[in-house]
Length: 138
Image 1: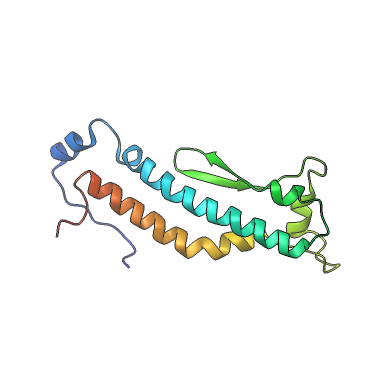
Image 2 (image 1 turned 45 degrees about the vertical axis):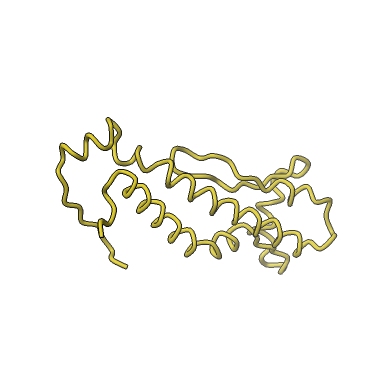
């Protein structure tokens, strides 16, 4: 896969196709949709991973507190929370390292999704460009 992008087009025709939108705004719904799929996958993996790691030793509130929230025009955030012990997700993710009781769940899940997410975003950008007649023509 190339590391860059080269576009040759008629600027007047491009402006007409975008109908007053910037290219970023035109692509935003495509990118945000792809990012939502990635965020849902990360949240599901994080919840499953944490549930396995805690294996019945918890109330389940921290696992239930893993949520996907909208984050700007292009993305989603996977957050974790526990109303009774607000810092617990952070402690499980990164603290207790010296005691060997660390239970990473969120970043490990994001790392697993990284390649699929990149491919999904690439495909979303291509779909958006094609929607406006800027994609591969042949």
